[in-house]
Amino acid sequence: MKRVYVNEEWCLGCHLCEYNCAFANSGETDMVSALKGKPIYPRIHVEGKDNINFAVSCRHCDDPICVKSCIAGALSVKDGVICIDKTKCVGCRTCILVCPYGALAAGPDGVMQKCELCLNNSCGAPACVTGCPNRAIQYEER
Image (cartoon, rainbow, N blue to C red):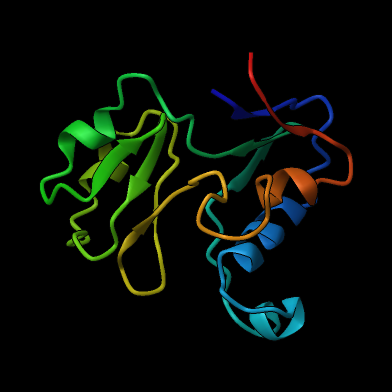
């Protein structure tokens, strides 16, 4: 299965992956109207320390503890991709507590969100990958 991989040696820490992700998942057709003057809620987050930057997103684990711990049954695995059913999520944040990678976050409505590899929008490839100017984020099988 293809997954998102990050090469921290190439990551500039520019946060463009976050903006591209937020836009791709906004449902809007214009990036400016979707993001300008608004808080963004990306499903990928750039972290950094001591001039080393890296993007954190869901690893789509083979044995996902987040799915097992979801008290509402909102998380499931579909064709190897961990997905959230937003209609079932109660916002308890248990998934945030158990994820060893810090890949989940609350959205603007308190419902959890995470990378779903842009399967629910028309990007084709994950928006973070296509929007990375330095090609530090790759979508491939390893």
